[in-house]
Length: 485
Image (cartoon, rainbow, N blue to C red; front, side, top):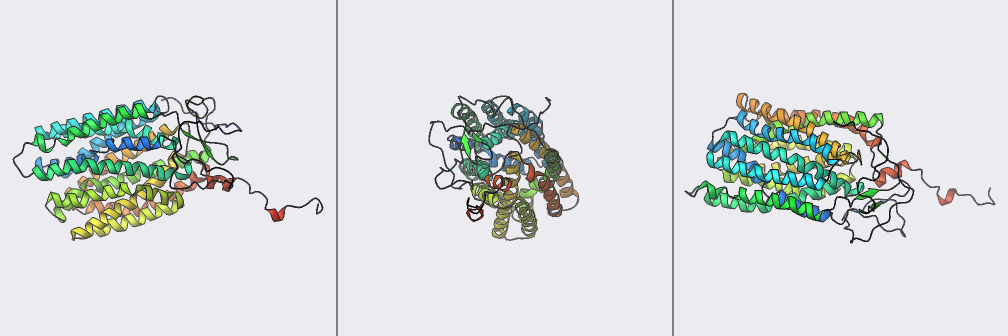
């Protein structure tokens, strides 16, 4: 791998002017920048940010459908064990692991839109493999399909997350990632309505599985379409660039004058503290990934065993939680932009552990549905907070930062489902979740330590962070007149 040279960028003393391309989309969240009443508000997003989100709608159409169906097909049709189910999840994570580090390096070198096209096309192929696996009732082909989807996802999400950071202000970065989640949620709703409606209407009939599971073909086509649309409609050279700290604003870079990063001749330097913080947060993230994936693959089997044997009831409990989480993600992101990061991760950890304990020990369907939904929502607060911080660690090497994050997280995701499967098979159906509860609480101090190293040394800073660094101008009352001097 090419050695990463980390030296600080220099900026011109004069901020770039706004090109007359199209009206800038303003977020509902106002940037807390240091502007006077006579100065125009800084833009929060580039003009094509909405286009990016619209395309995510198609990419997310089959996400929850496949997630649910992998478990359903493996357990009910093919009688897979807990360990086998955990392995299917691990196959997807392993594919994701292989691609993310490579995708991170390529994101900083070649066109991100081409990588996203490749990722979209690969996910479409994965849906086709899963469709064939269902028709042939092949456990091995299910493994191939989950691996393919995971491998392709790395080439989609790593460059996409880097582009979100380039096209949004650091003041609203959590909100930007929340909007990504919301767009994904609308795609999931639309795709799930089609897929699960057909499933409910036909699963207990003699209709051919080719028809019952035919939405997988639709999802494959939607992903390929989204990839080509992204390539044609999104200009990755249009980005929101931070200008010098004394300017306290953001500008849209002109693709004609700035086709790559802010300055190809300049590079970043990371302080020793930032390097330590990065390594520390990676260790925390791998532990958190192991913990979250211990119980996640077994939520649906747990519901089937302890809540209801009717898959329709389980679906009605399981599916809305993820959709609601994504739909309200912009609001959670707005909250994450306002709260101190340490408070955000503390709320997420403590509340998540308590909610998990209550829903695994509840027997009322409606109570479990509410608690499971709240559990998913509160988790996103911590996720968006960490995503925000990682996006601001670098402006030149965001692809490598996100690629490293996804790689290290997937290392944990490989081990978690297998550990959870062993606990499920040999202890009890609640044991994976009890393990998760304990570890979730224990991780909070580790997050605090990582944030202590990271926060003061981020390369990209919000307006509030810049104002804390800059010396305050003397107040009018402290200024002396010539006579007083």
